[in-house]
Amino acid sequence: MSPPEHFAVEYAINPWMDTTAPVDTELAVKQWEGLRETLTRLGHTVHVLRPEIGLPDMVYAANGAFSVDGVVYGARFRYPQRMAEAAAHKRFYAELGWKYTTPVETNEGEGDFTYLPSYLGGVVLAGHGFRTEVAAHSEAQEALGRPVISLRLVDPRFYHLDVALAPLDDSNITYYPGAFSESTQAVLRQLFPDAVIADEEDALAFGLNLVSDGRNVVLNTEATALAAKLRSAGYVPVPVELTELKKGGGSVKCCVAELRP
Ligand code: ARG
Image 1 (cartoon, rainbow, N blue to C red):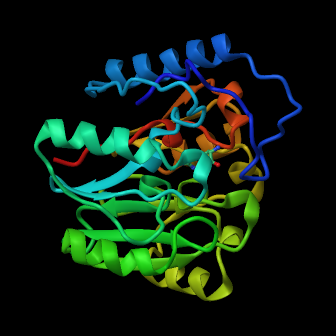
Image 2 (cartoon, rainbow, N blue to C red):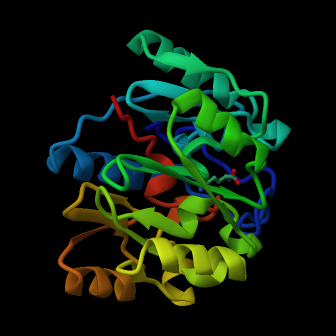
């Protein structure tokens, strides 16, 4: 995670960003601290990446890379405003001593890649359509040695996979079907008959931009309807307030790059 000390909405690269809306950076940091404390309280270790001046979106740490079994597939950002973030993440993994592949193809890390360790022995789900190029999916498969399933996003409001779909545990997911093409919806129905189905309201509340440890599901406070669905499915919703970071087009999951040693 990387604190939003330099967070601002200075450019608009997704439909949520309005450069004329005021941003309260202090409140953003306070809310981010709340997320970090929640994860720590749930027993997770949080490493902090030093925020850099001139990189206002660096708080969305999920986009900096994607790792599986201690192997890292690096990011290559779509927009020039964020490109320099990849190097900070690369340095972090170098310090951990993890094998790092520098990508040729445009991809935004965990924004568009996620992993289900117990599904068919370990499967990567990958989004394309707005940020990550579909060619990055096969590049990731070669870098990580895991099967990658390509999912096509079609609604610009849900421009990354992690605002449209999330793993709830090692083999099941929750998703909003309307964010995906008809054919991808058929693929998801086939692969995940027991998925928790979210609706447009859940997705617009950034409810799907969640982090789950298989039991506790940390999600945005505004996603009350999705929280209720998750509770009936046997999970424990843990709400966290992140209103300021929504102004950049992200929530809980965007702030967290999960490390899979
Ligand atoms: N303003 C950032 C962008 O448009 C938000 C990134 C959100 N991150 C995410 N993992 N969905 O790139």
